[in-house]
Length: 164
Image 1 (cartoon, rainbow, N blue to C red):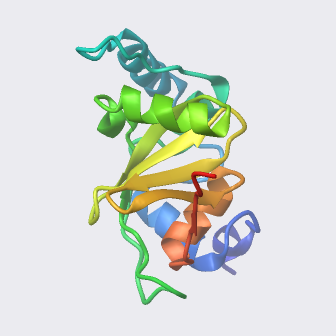
Image 2: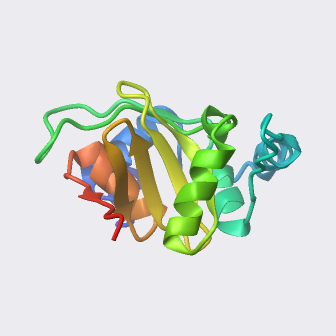
């Protein structure tokens, strides 16, 4: 019996496997580390005076998934699966960029981590929606982190955000 490996229906099997390989398990909650990241982001001011806004959806995402490095196995569905490092300090120096995206979306946006191969920044908004920002544009990854992790690990093509 491998009930412990199949008892979760939260994530598709390949996503669950990648998360567990990275050290995640249901109930993982490192609020102490999440608060350290929150303080570091709140305390950072860019040379032009831009600051990060920290909010509960970001802190909760960091507490459950922060610090994990995911390396998906196998081919992606539409695009290559993304290797991820879920550490919000990858976005420490991008307060202006995240602020601009937040204004365009009429919400606040906070860093989550990075796609390690492409250096795309992963970000979350106050509603828990997840985005990727890279040199080709801004991308919507899903309505919550669970969907976004699924899209990234399974290689599902994201939706480009329009500037309209």
